[in-house]
Image 1 (cartoon, rainbow, N blue to C red):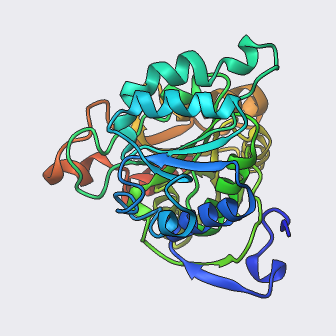
Image 2: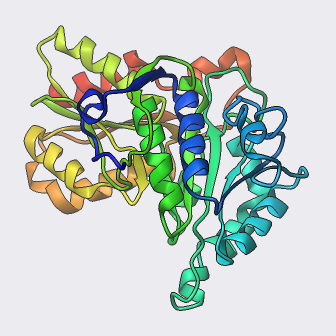
Length: 340
């Protein structure tokens, strides 16, 4: 049974489980592996070891080595193999150990994954998912903590999804696997086990391309995704103490962005703060500013603020927290746009 989108879990099914985000990913993979024999999992150490973060733990034992496949250490090879599988009727779900490890596969994704539908005039599609743990905040070494989603949102032909909660993670992952086109599925390592949420058993779908309002407010719109959502929420709670109400939007999908919810929110509040941990230059926040300019310019009461990472590589352990946006930085931006 497929449940409807974004209704509270308790209203959709009598049985739920309290899961972390990474457990919800595992549950989503198990659910779709049971239903669709065309789904295959591929990745480095995802079988016997269950992956670096144990997102595939127990799945090889349950479904066998033919469906949960340990691959050689070759990201380009994994993606290239999965393209061939996808155009021949399978639905490969690839795990990159870390988002920063995707660079050797970038050529395959840019040149083939995102273009085959257009190249064949719709005769072939590439129904594959690339899962990638990403982001800073877990004291990982260089390259492991990169947040370069904008490299892929600038690539027509592939969708980019980034959930911030367990419920959304499972529903969006199932939707991504069932999508006829490729999806990059970003999983923030920082919030993999940060909290638990009631997640329905069985299959349900959260629609790709739709944002979600987490908090109603009239004074300023705050847009975030992934690990920056709880940061934005803490800043909004702090702002409430000073009589400022925030309309907090979890965008959930970075390509295509939900232009309707962005415009609707900004038209209501007249102010906007965008939060992301990626570098400021070339970040997805710039696209959100463009959408606001195109749809809501006449409603704007103050300049739009962006709270982002800095234009440097993610620093090593001692300075990592200084790189990441904090609730204090977001709160300062909220005050700035409100008191402009």
